[in-house]
Image (cartoon, rainbow, N blue to C red; front, side, top):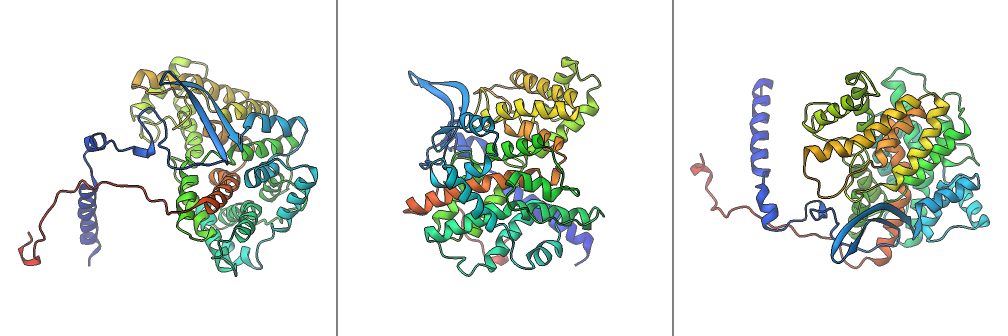
Length: 452
């Protein structure tokens, strides 16, 4: 088959696939379909119960939903209190956050030290894994590297399909310990083979926190400041969990309910997080701001900034999707507590890095974007910046390459996914299977010779 004809055939078949897949928009309202498993006001359809995390964004008074500043709780504890606790005591917090999510309580000093040692012991990748699975087949997408590596670990696990609680916990602890190495080594292979840079592989250092080891393994000279390490640690804590209703955690529950293995579950969750509507949004924020800085000549001119934001909404700027990335959330309306916390600490790093002007631009866009959205379309609930709005800027200040932005999210969220997988295993009774209504019209079968 000639290439030209093949291209025409593919184009024709694409048109047919689009036509056959299209469903009249009014039917979703007619049959009260909960698109995204959410009502029009943003409230989620209740499909499960969890004790792992809770997202709180409104109160109900006399049957009226009233938006309130967002709250995020891990195992019933406010994220603000968790963050204040380890920061005030001058400690790294991600490891104790993992412990809390997995086991339901904050660890005491002995339990925390034993847990850290357990993770350190599980950091080492299988023999020749770096060479055979990462260096020999580099990928341009680090989320693909993570997914492929996770599935490769299945092949090296003699008890890969054992879904007993003890074995699943072993697998989850191993993945929590190894995710940072898989992601960073994947990037080093990419930058060497596709970016023509020197290949530098640093082994993780026992005793360092996961955040410190990420910076140690990523940077050629392994050097970083204390503020840099603590801000990355904070970002990991804020991304570690977000209730059972987010896309990747829901995927974790759905696949776990089928009885499949841990590696398949986590690979599927990674595939979900890879999407720009989920974990990939922080890269979009950075790219959007790069264009904004080119299009807006005066960063202090709020009218000029708002004009650009309106162009985004009209699909006249950036990727022409009509989105202001990093603004708006499926649940939060008044504020995202993660964004509020990250903004305060991002300001400190911006001062250390001499990037106060750029940080000021972010603050202006954060304030002006909801106003622009309100002028452009009807808002059923409020909009505010979400965690992606500042996380990409933080990673940029930390000199983390954009290819690792979403993998950093995954390095954190593996803790939440693990807790949700264990919770589903403990409580599962049935496979999760939502309902879909067919709206295809009934037709008769036509014999081949009678078809046009």
